[in-house]
Length: 378
Image 1 (cartoon, rainbow, N blue to C red):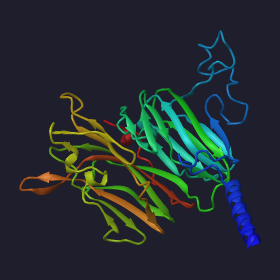
Image 2 (cartoon, one colour):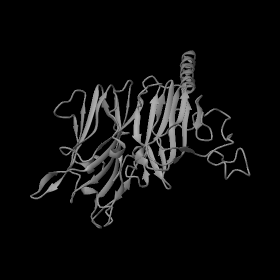
Image 3 (cartoon, rainbow, N blue to C red):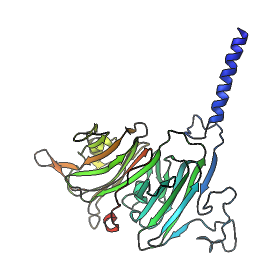
Image 4 (cartoon, one colour):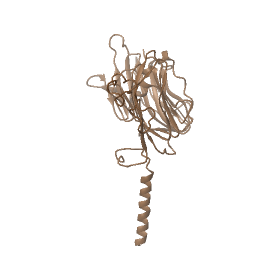
């Protein structure tokens, strides 16, 4: 009997040690942050463009050359990069295996005319192609605090993403400046070099705009092909009529759905985890909120002069409730308000959106981005 217990204990101990040895340093939370792994931490910024060990802070020229002229190398010589009009700058290009765990950046210039693209494992077409402001929930080109689990925007227009982004062979991130003015970009990309699980899907994000909506429908995404799960929505919504504007239902068509979807919401504010017009009943005003998984974080009110329309920023992250699809996915939302006689009004709002999802590659080609004029916020 003693030998049997000893054998069972040995097996259990070996299994525990093997489990510990196989920990890849990912899927971190407060409950397991104490665990060590063989993952290697790397970081790319203008002070270390390659992320190589022992190669940061070595610049002798850069955007900080003038203020560092008396101090020299090692004293904030290259804190940012300049991107000229019409130029595309490669922020990072890494040939290895691992996961991007955090991105921080604070770009100057026109956020709607600054396009961020991310390419996985040497693909020619990007898996992420989004104006940088919209990717971080700032589609109107104005700062607003946003405090959620995967995206935070902090004072001074500090954009942060905590979406985990696996790569198996390579990743490349670029930033295109479509404007006529030079821009500055401060950024840092933090990633882990480690083994990626076989079932890890790739991160994707796509931008669309309806200005105005046609048939009172905004299509957030169409033509997703493959297997994966949908994880988030950001919308920049300009209302072009009076009254409550958010009666529309969001609809998820998946895996062969035709006329009718598998999932239909009950109203716009309901989808963003609010209710009853986002209204504070005591003040009779829209009320901002920013929570881990959903928010109405931005409310831009008319000023009586040139800013004549109501504008809103909203997000909904499906982290605890991803929308899983096996073959395909399409998402639409109705642009619906009220007219006389307690009847629905089909509106003509200006709606921009970013959708976020994970899927196995290859992904279907994205539609072309709108032209510069059609991206413009006006």
